[in-house]
Length: 359
Image 1: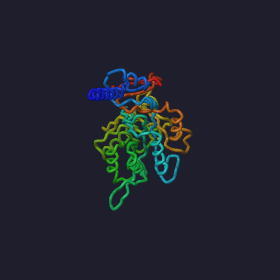
Image 2 (image 1 turned 120 degrees about the vertical axis):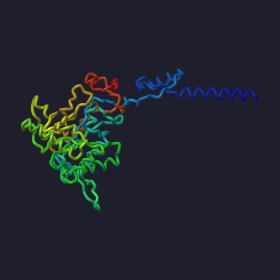
Image 3 (image 1 turned 90 degrees about the horizontal axis):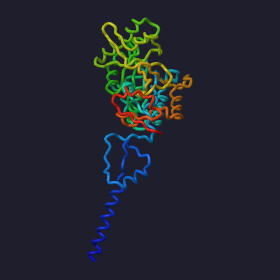
Image 4 (image 1 turned 135 degrees about the vertical axis):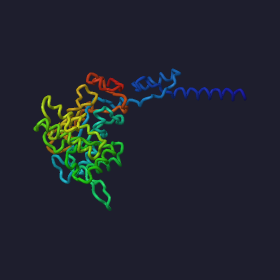
């Protein structure tokens, strides 16, 4: 009887060991599995110990394409009546909901041009901009003697949406001009500080909004330098790094350099990004033709867009998902399909790993 029990225990132990060995999955070198059944068989026939990857897995099955296009949305007013350059608060909320539901996530303009895109795998970055520094973009109201953000202004709507959807991101660039950005003179400093401390950016929109393509070059320098001087008078340590061209106009030819850098009365300005009015999505910062000094934007409107508004492009990307930037989830790796390899500027990768796969 003892001999029978001994043989039974040996059998159980052998069966248990076999089960543990069969549960090991061997991950191939690029962290993807092209044939799960084959991988399972190979794992069963080897004694290799699985090593945890040091980087997040690249989600190839979600069609990662980090050389796809990115929308830079251009907003102006948020008002009670829908107009060509005005979104109602209801429609702006709708925009946020639609972008969120379709897999878009906010990033800052500076993160975009610096190729510092940190978006969850399978999702698409989107940049949001507001021109003119209007009251309905950032309005403060008083409740019981305390300044509070108007829930129906752009900042209030963004903050409210972020509370319930913090994975959407919290970013936008506000292009202001003077003398009174956001139209509440005594609150300029408070508003600027709130924006900077909460992930938003402040951009240059000239001093008083002339067409930079129709004034003397010396006046162009003056307009852009005075904007920087004025912004620094409220937030001394802040660096203004981007410009949205008023009316989308700039000096022609070699004189375009005046909107990029210059000086006036001891104040220098240097724009790492220059935004046009434009009508189409922008290239990935990995693209060989990417030019941060001539960035197009998409009009965030549904009126008189002539097929180039936000919903036109959302529809386009639904029908052409291969044209859309889709993140691999790892900011240190740039993943593209082999069809995009020739369009990548490897000098722009700044030490990031380039990973190419066949669809």
